[in-house]
Image (cartoon, rainbow, N blue to C red; front, side):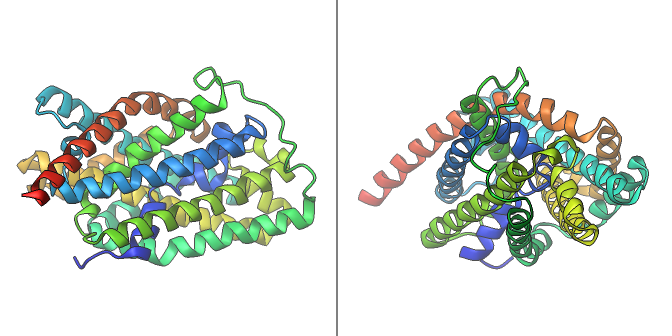
Length: 358
């Protein structure tokens, strides 16, 4: 695979986060919108942390020349701790695939009346077939589709502001009732922690292809700006029309209220986003498992198929339930490993300086 440069890195990094929960508005509303105006502050802080951690992680892959998720997360040669970190990351990637499958099922039911189980099954079949193409196919898909997704969400936000007005944008009501996230600060840290855990799993096999610092800094900063645009567009749209947050896919409900055709268009864009996110998570999960098992490398298709079937079965739990329960729990767990990664970066940076001075 050729070297990854600034814009390709930006689109790939953004693609790690723009899945069903994010683009549908469900995830953003539960973690930010439900906390009133402080939710805007929370996401601004989250974006800053995404940029900082993203730069540190890609630099860490450069300095250590390592693409193994558990070794990047844990700087010490403690086998059980590395195994635990890798297992947690792998399980989380699996649940990302599950949530994408659940989101597709909910969306197709909402838009076209297709049974949830059937929509999820067809979706997972397509993801499975595409995952066989590997990392390069994922990166190319992100480069083509993420720019369209960013522009589309901004366009829908402008339409929402023009239709519903902008009076309610800065008057968000506090509606949080999730005991796992008692305030906006904890919600923000939880959101960052579990998203970065998934991002690390996806970016681990990608980081080795980014070779220049200017591409790292430029790509991650541009990605942060794109995330701000998308999240700001979604949160302000839902603030202008808060009735939409009662739906399992709020932004699809909002777009459908604007115009039936717009609802269908947004639904298609959401489907594309979920496909990219599920594909990235499945590829990242597969790459990690392949590193750990020669048996998996020789039976890759069977393993991918098994993961896809299990993800489809798990998606029958329901989309909102997965977002509100599973994600926060993983956020708390992954926070510790982010601290370990920061320690690893400091140690690797110190070693790099000492080597340069010799």
